[in-house]
Image (cartoon, rainbow, N blue to C red; front, side):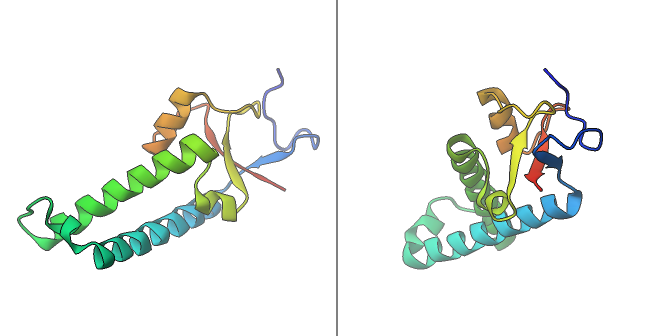
Length: 123
């Protein structure tokens, strides 16, 4: 297998994504999660009372993180990328441009990238 050398060979289809593109995808995902949470609590207000919290900040942080992790779990395990990554034409891949294993996808859900997994985009 050939290792990923983005500047040595132009036959590779993927280029390693820069931090601006990664943060843009994360921002799109965060906006989607906040919109979903707002709609969920607007139409189903009883969900907000399921767990008692000492203050409003704890309540909001818990539900935003919970929905964000569930959103990433569903999109990464079934689609291979989040919606923000799809908008910016990115995907997870290994340096040799192969797909991720289930274990690597699960770690990516929790935003734990191993040294062999990163975000790449099509040129």
